[in-house]
Figure (cartoon, helix red, strand yellow):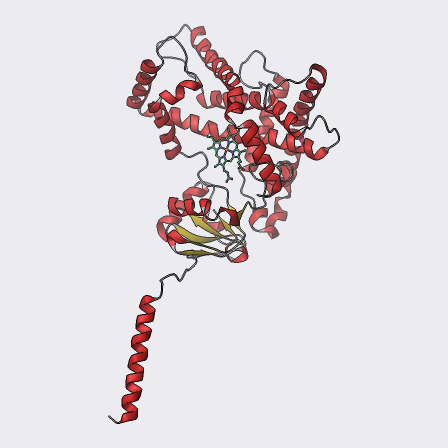
Amino acid sequence: MDLPQLFLLSALFIFSVSYLIKSLLRPKNKKTTAPMIPGAWPLLGHLHLFDTVNPTHVTFGEMADVYGPVFMAKLGSLNVMVINSKEVAKEIYTVHDKLLERPELTASKILGYNDSFLTFSPYGLYWREMRKIAASELFSTSGIDMLMFSRAREADLAFGNLYGRWEQRGKPKEGVLVDMKQEFIDLTANISLMMVAGKRYFGENPNCEVKEARRCGKLIREFLDYFSLFLLSDVAPVLGLLEWKIKRGMKRTAKELDKITEGWVEEHKNKRRDHGRSVNDYLDILIETLGGDKIPGLSDTHTKIKALCLNLVLAGSETAIVVLVWAVSLLLNNPHVLKKAQEELDSKIGKERVVEELDIKDLVYLQAIVKETFRLYPPVPLIAYRDVMEDFDIACCNCHVPAGNESDQMA
Ligand code: HEM
């Protein structure tokens, strides 16, 4: 081997060794985006993989079994990153939450006073202000405690009514047949309506305002059904035109519900005008805090009050019913757990009085039953998706999330 060859070979060797050392020392932080699942159709994306039998979260769960805890799917024209991991969800909602935004939803625009519901409004100034009011005035300890009596009275009436029916039939040992789901629907609706607007509409209660109650019950049902629809307008706007009939129905329901809400607000304002300041429910608090009655004609404030009022009535009803129905059903199917819960009630409360909210802190077994029900049958299994406003990296799964069109939304 002559000198130039030797020189070339040693240079090559030194270069290879230094490249190897560099590549070994280089931090392994090259981030990749989550894998896109195969089988997307033009225009529809993976929408054809969803059916009317399996709930959406079950289909996503089956996909996660195959493609891992973080994957991409195409819903219509949107690229959606689906997260099925507690660690990843935690990092996103704690470290990167400022880079996320709520998406624009057709239902929220038509049914929610043009995105004015706290649950669906974009994270701007409006959401921050309304959330501050809700947190400090309505959901603060004093706001919650103020209406404790209201909730207890509704529960007393509902269970007193059930007991009455059993008594009327001569207190049969085997009990009487009741539709507990319907009882819970009436009870939760009465509690929300009483807390928000001072109204009792459902069940066989003596003060029930039957005609308005029936109308309100029907509209709440329609509202919740419309809101749970998966609309093509939100994911494939071109096909949204096909949904004109649904949108027309939504507008009709929104208009009718607005009439009812308008009535509640007016009634509260008139009462304040005629009888002076009194705070009996959330509407009284909202009118006082937002000053709606002091600034007549300021339609924006008036609409804000109506939006939050209706939002609160609707937000708590469906979710609470699902937990209650599952909890009772699980208890009936697990008599040994029911027995232990009864023993806890007997030892901590006794048989001479009914359970009160203030007792809950001492009823640890009952608390565990509720938590287990939430774990087994979460009432909101799929958190509402978010728009990704800026690129970010998820450290715990070494995954890059691009903003905008490359990864439009996260579920
Ligand atoms: C078992 C009962 C409930 C469950 C499982 C539940 C679940 C949820 C979830 C998952 C969210 C987050 C939605 C999102 O932004 O993606 C949420 C937000 C919200 N919920 Fe509930 N909820 C329940 C009861 C209630 C009740 C009783 C009320 C009111 C009376 C209520 C009012 C709200 C409001 C105002 C928000 C929006 C908060 C914000 O934007 O910061 N919820 N709820």
